[in-house]
Length: 321
Image 1 (cartoon, helix red, strand yellow):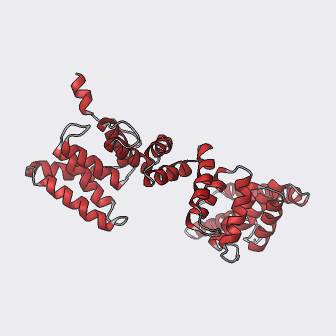
Image 2 (tube, rainbow, N blue to C red):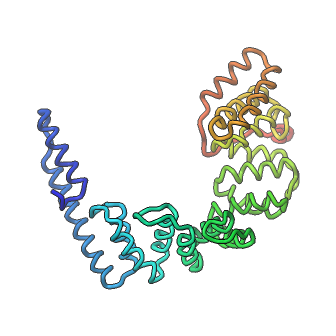
Image 3 (tube, rainbow, N blue to C red):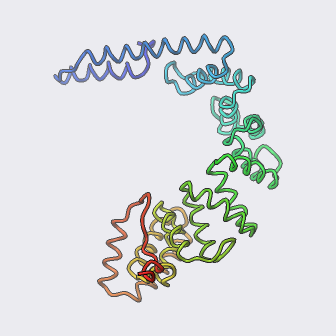
């Protein structure tokens, strides 16, 4: 029994339970499962032979199999051994696996930020975008390397230029905090176009304030809505404020209350301090509403669910009619 993967053990155990319960079960299904397991075992042996012959990709996959216990029982020593062989031969995935193992204290390996950074650098030096982004994070936080924001920005930019979403978003935020608003808008738009809610929020704020872009309340409202529909509490609160003031959208107290109420609920665990501000803004809007309007806004809040895209009626759309 130990020679079979877990799926076969589960299938045979399930069959025994069904028979004990007096329920019929197809033996054919179990036999098919065994055939699949046998094919997986054969594939594993072929993979092992390739790994033993020096195939770095096969070595990486063998290490992953031992790490996950997908075909063979979990064996951390074997996983590390095969990953190290592949990593020493320049396999990027193996290098990142080792970096992650050192950083997360996996495979029984000690937590070692310096070793983690060393392996991520090897992947980054070969042009791997994920490795570059992680190494950028190392330099930003000083984990395993001396803190160096210039180096962090450089590695983030390398990853961002390859379209790596997290790097684009991080660059946008770093430039925004440095008040380099033009570069911030450039990278925030790159990340926002890929669906990053945080970048969408910051880009919306830039349009609202005219920072690095021409002030445009319509554009601000569009980006706030995209981020709000992804569940970003800040975007939800900003959108609520725009409905309150009628900036970029038609003034609508029901929508203002709805979004501020959703923001307060969304930020309860993430931003408990800010949540109070959202609640106060919502209550201020409520002071301008009828009982019926409040009830409607609360209903809309309860029924709201994240959406991928949504159209928003802009004030300029009505002015063109």
